[in-house]
Amino acid sequence: MLHLASETPEAWGRWAVAHLDTIVLDHAHCERKAASNAINLIFRYTDQVHLMAPMSALAREELEHFEQVLAHMQRRDIVFARQFPSPYAGELMKACRVKEPERLLDTLLCGALIEARSCERMQLLHQALVDDGCDDALAALYDSLLACEARHHATYVELARGCSIVDETALRARLQVLAEHEAAVVARLPTEPRLHNGVP
Image 1 (cartoon, rainbow, N blue to C red):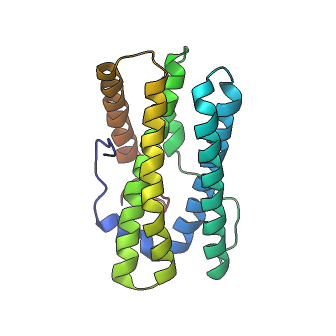
Image 2: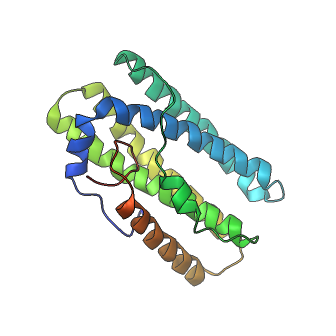
C-alpha cells in the first residue's frame, strides 16, 4: 500500500515517453538526491540508532539505481548535466514540523511519500514504454525498480514507526495529513517533464 491521496492519470506515462530523455535525466538526479538524503539522515540523527543500518543500506541501493540510470543514459546518448529541479520535494517538506522529535517523524513520512509517488510514476512509465515498444531495455529497468521503490516506501514508514513518539493510530493519521498535502503539491506543480511534476 503506497498511502497516496491522489492518483496520476495513465496518460502521464504516454506524455513521459514523449519527453523520455528529459524524464530519464531527472530520474538520475532523483536517485542521486535520494542517496544524499539517506546519508544526511545518518549524519543529522546520530542518536537514532534504529536509522543507521537501514538508511545506509537504502543509500547504497539508491546509488546502485543511479548507476543503472546513468548506464541507460549513456546507451541513449543522454549527457548527464545540471537540470532545473522540480519544486516537488521542497514543497512537500514545508509541511514538516520544526521541533524534534516531530521533525524527524514528518521527514521520514515525507520520504515514504516521495518513494510512493516514484513507484506510481515508474509503473505508469513502464507500461507506457511496453505499449510504445520504443525501448525494451528501459522498460525492463523500470519494471525492476518497482519493488524497490515500494520497499523503500515501507522502510520509511517502518522507521517512522520506530521513533515511538506516537501510537499507530496517530502515525496513520499524520501520514494521511501529509499524503493529502503531497497530493495538493502535485496538483499545483508546473508541468515541465519531471518524474514528480504536475500532470499536463
